Length: 459
Image (cartoon, rainbow, N blue to C red):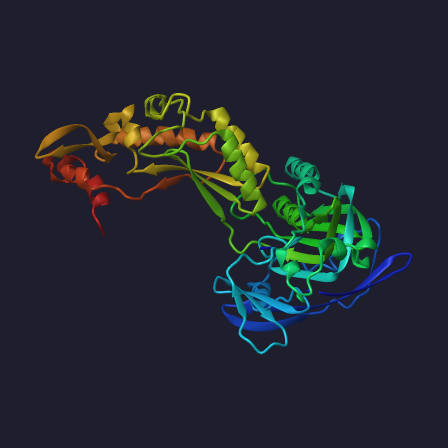
């Protein structure tokens, strides 16, 4: 689903705009109304400066806790799409009610009418004038006004390549055939003067206020402001990672009809509610080629997700190629060719970086390590039944051997050198304790490794 700043503009030799903003903030469940009024009339030139644009766009930084009045306001608003029928989505059902008719709504179990040219997910501040539409001409003249880097230039290049190829075209709906519905055919709709006389927008200005950082991190500022008015399109962000999110939003609000491209009069100010927005992929149980992971990263970028949680290894296989312990993948991978060497990982990390995505590797321990034992059985706990060793039956990592910790230190030192991310996820779930209980019953281990036993005891 894709989803209002009162704007009064007058056109002369230059453009002057007057804004009156009504905003709502909701904090900890309590609604609190705040009026933000920008009463100054500001001249906008063909090459607007950030100081001018800040008169129109509230600062992207959050000085106080903010909430999601736009979200609440939108969800509680029954959107009327046609003159004679009211449509609403409630509790999973799509209702259609004929206006001025004293009857219960007609429940139609079907998907609602898809929106077009709306951002996803719903921005924190989203003001749109449905009555003003601009035409986007191809190619769009994109100007990076201050700080730039490979991340931004790569994102702009992808935007240029994709925005006109994949701009959504408005959908046909069979509800147009309901007698007296008020729906009009799309051919007739796009003959309205709103579309035929739409102002052409040819220039897109991008302002990034600070120098680029090479990699995204948890504290990265992903906020941005996007302004679409008759003087052009302006994207502003404090950091490059916010510019990436704004570019994706702009690509979403552009829509098409028969090779014509349009965008509504819009102001967006957005920031993520959650700093960590992750997708987990499991390449241990089901190996994924690099191209598949690239597709996942593209989908994450389009949905403004920012963490790829890579569950690399598990009981089933060990596809990570370690140079310090080559038999981990040499014997533990599902097939010698179904592995990721250091160059493969570097390619995936770089592809993710250019899309503002962190890659956090996970090496699940101390359980879920059966595949480790194919090449290095001594680091796992030998399991017994009736005091007899069961050949090939291994439990979690063996904490009663100092060599296990030396092994882990050496392996994880290598992993942290391969991945630029400062976080290494160590799992910790579903540890079978039966085999560890054998260690606890052994007087030798109890006397010589008491510190590990204390560590294992429940608190």
